Length: 239
Image (tube, helix red, strand yellow):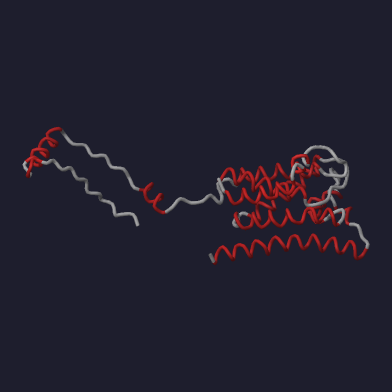
């Protein structure tokens, strides 16, 4: 119980630290009347490649930032809590892969916002939950899906020219890739009894007909001619 509490606090801390940086960037923009849009991803340009690292911290307006804040917090906490040993690696991979693929294949426009990372984290949690039969990570994913509604699915196809559907699509693909690649990490271990039982070797004993007849003859001499077969296990009882 104590360990779970520590994990939860750590998950909240890391996630809020990331989200806080995004809000600080927006506050600086409003305070100093500056636009960081030029630090977005501008595909297939050297200067625009910096956006691979900076674009998720930049948002068009407060509404854009607000719409990404709750998914970032809920999904971030979910990944750090349920997949704490690989959480940073997974998020960094989603972050970099999404940005790089957008830089390679997206339209000639500045792409900003953390939506691509959100799509990646969501598909990672969702697919990992199915692959590992983890009901808790599935629950977090479905809550975010419910809030997004149908826009989650329409967000990965061309539509509104002001929306970077490419970021959404590339993020979703990155999340699927990470879920498959890390499918063997974080799997719930079998119980000690199951592991012990699986490790017990199987012995096969072979007896000749003469040996069987001799044993039955000895047993038949017991009272009431009752034949009793017993097997003494050489193994200790499982604790």
